[in-house]
Amino acid sequence: MKKLFNKLFMVGALAGLLIASGCSDDDEVVTDPTDEFDVTLEFSDATASVNDPLIEDYASGDGQLTVKARLIITSNDRTIRRVYVTQNIAGTGDQPFNLRENGLSNKATKPDGSIDAEASGDATVDYALNLPIPSGIGTNGSVVYKFWATNGKGDYRDPENSLAAGVGQIEITVGTGTNPNAPVKSYTTTILAAPLADGSSETFVSLLDGELYRVDQGEEYSAFWDFGYYYGATLEASLAAAGNYPSSIIDVVTVANTTDAELNSCFFQMSSMTSAMFDAVDESRDLNSITQSSNERINMLEVGDIVEFVDNYGKKGLIRVVDLTPGFGSDGQITIDIKVQP
Image 1 (tube, rainbow, N blue to C red):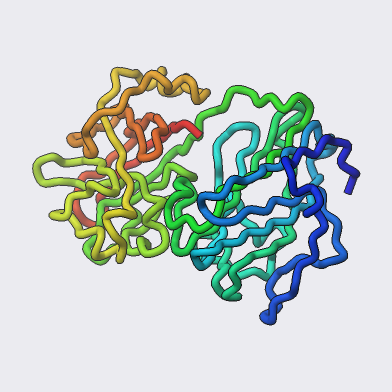
Image 2: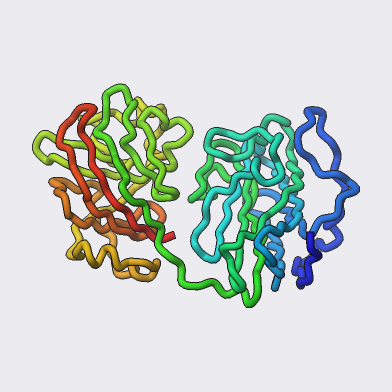
């Protein structure tokens, strides 16, 4: 790996860069006391201040370089059960970051992709990991990694959910570190199925990554759901926030084995935009004018409709109805295009 020719800023705790780490009995990933690291991030508890390291003006080269980092998390009053990591490339928004693919390959993960920290039962986690500097940054920009620990199932978009320690971050800049205007996230030809009583239908979508989810996948994934589809006898083709889905259609909490608190809000209203205007939306700022309604359901949808929304986390977006197969059973579905702020 090329040497960092950078300025490494850590307010205090610089001496901690080469702290030795003990080994656990279960052969889980720990740091090697002889290793050297480009950067160390250490924090404890949910209320403690965090000195977030910044690596400036890193030479990205061919985009294959990585920063060797050490992550130490301690919680004095809560058991650490999971560790969540997100990556934000060039200001395009925080996305779940898969640690197993980046230096922690023998560390168990939970179904939602978080690291299973409770297997060791330790009050402190100590990881050595390689943080890639993606080529998508270009010659100027930044990548930001955020880390936090939870004492239960958390939420990639809401670190406060079950928070035990954090949030800390490592920021790496290339060139000036200035990111371009953020593009919208686009999900095309998204097909949502009318719900089936057994929960086997892919009825819900996540605006985080455009993934579709079955209703019966809720135990681990319900925090990802933003809205779902249903077809009503009188209100016909409809979208509803995960947290405001009509129980007369399907009891989401029971079938998904989740709780009301896990389910997200999402607010809808019809848009005056045309399909051509929808196509012209490229950047996040193009959606800033959307305002939040009070409606968590929208009904009587037809092909060609454009719907504005604001999600549970304040992200604004548009939905275009592309195709529609009316009905309640396995043949019923809606096809939509989505654009949303990162």
